[in-house]
Length: 110
Image (cartoon, rainbow, N blue to C red; front, side):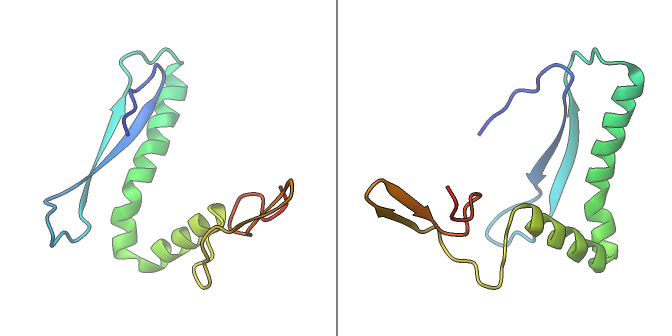
């Protein structure tokens, strides 16, 4: 998957550090901005603030595991992940009616 940075975009690039079969999950984080940032400096500063706050998360989470757990729980909520009893997608066809399992965004109501 590849994406080119568009005008007025700032991206967080994450790459594995020293990876091999014994990789320990270490990553390098880099902020990349488009060459053409035409928005007002105040908006650029706020976007950079958001990106640097996001990139600082892993350092803080390493020191405070409860913070990591809280963010992971919220991420799972946003992605509708229920780790306790996660099941694969199930699609049932009955004539013209398709019923999707609750693990889809429609939660079976499509």
